Image (cartoon, helix red, strand yellow):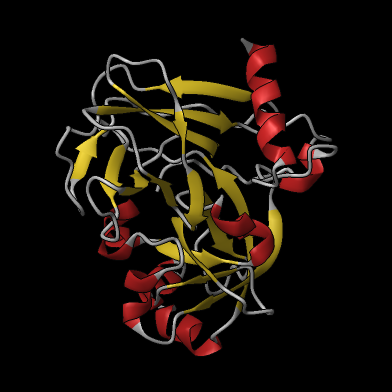
Amino acid sequence: MATETSAVFLYYCILGVNLLIMFPCIALGCTSCVHQSKLAYYAYSGAVDVGACGYGSFAETFYGGNVGAVSPDLYRNGVACGACYQMRCTDPKLCTKSGTTIVVTDFTENSQTAFVVSRRTFSSLALADQGPQLIKAGIIDIEYKRVPCEYKDQNMLVKVDKLSQYPHYLAVQFLYQGGQTDIVSVDVEQVGSSEKHYLKRNYGAVWDIDNPPGGALKFGFVIFSGYNGKRVRSKKSVLPSDWKSEGVYDSGLQISDISSEKCSPCNETDGGWGHSP
């Protein structure tokens, strides 16, 4: 199976889905290591609901609304949508040592920063009496690393995008994806059939297909966890035969795989960072 799934992953990379197949670790940049960059906050509060990943108001339900935009190298044409990053400010006079965890829901072209978050999330990095001072700074130095997303007692959900037109066009998003992996391929098949129909990434977190199969549907995925690909498939019906635009359905599964990057060891000390939000 490992050989098969690795081959599947390479096939999709050749199609230009995600990473450089010759140097997969370099392409990801060993994201579990601690990196340095800068952080800013959105100028207006409504930005959270209009992120490039396409989650809309659902973004406010991820990690208590701690969501943000990332730079092009982290966004990777939408592959990063739903990924979790832990970050902390590097000024000990202003900020806590623990920092916070955010979920990627947007893309930023701000050349000065790797992340842009809400004003509230930005302030949460500060010590108890330093919030106003941190906000006044506007852009701050941070350390960050990718961490597993944790959604306790929550399966991954499938949301039918509002642009879907039953039964001729299906677009979906996958909400609350756990673990530390990237979805690089999605297929759908009618329950009771073994014929797979492949979706393509339209934009952000949205995958779509013209003329999807009829009847009740279930999904399959190829996920990438830093070095190898792996197949994951729902065991039961996910979408009913009469699926609805903007309907939200239980996938019956959750992804918990953790990145296993075969890169050079990280030359850093994480200071006891945990993975919890």
